[in-house]
Image 1 (cartoon, rainbow, N blue to C red):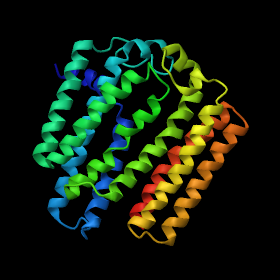
Image 2 (image 1 turned 135 degrees about the vertical axis):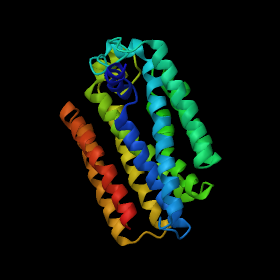
Image 3 (image 1 turned 120 degrees about the vertical axis):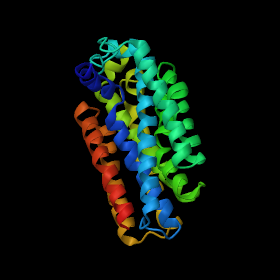
Image 4 (image 1 turned 90 degrees about the horizontal axis):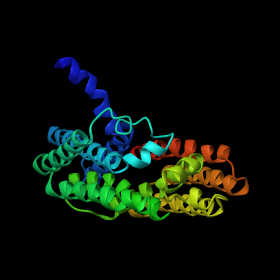
Length: 294
């Protein structure tokens, strides 16, 4: 029995897409920390640390359940794509019903957990994120190229959840954090879509590079949202009085991001798409570090 559980654990873990969960808890922490800081608190109280731990556990469970449901609804797509064909469900490492029960339990437990140990606002926001990701974004991937824009909404809500966990309400800095995450996701995921455009096409997903293979429209989207990302991040200087150190750092990071996006429109290649993708991975943690440090 114990050996069977041990053998199953990696399968269930793979269903949760833990790397996405890591991004969720990092950005939720950012929102929580800034929310406390807006109330002149700097996480010096024991109770604030306890709430933070409950927040991160609850949001990680919620994200894990959403990712599991995503794989349940896309078994047929995943089985057609080289990038995803080795996931647990296409390989029958786990049954559909067991995956469904697992995902549903994570949704129910995470919602009740956040409601009980954080606050009702965080629980409601978590449920909203869950529902948007599963019932709006996931089916839209088969229907319209706008799915990336729609998908950026649930992907940008974790820092807002962190903020409401700390303050009980949503204020303008929380929306700036939302804007940063939403704008960042567009070039990040479009770069992935260029790299795996044929794979997405084989899977029947309506990604911009698969529908418009010249990537001109995709590159325009990237440039627009990298510019928007830079402007939104600088909005923290106006709202929260962030100083010249943060402004210069955010501007420099944004200009480099814009540069890589312009390179892509001038030379449409997988190599340049990978450059955008890898820089996007570096950009976000550096910006988060600047926000916390400033």
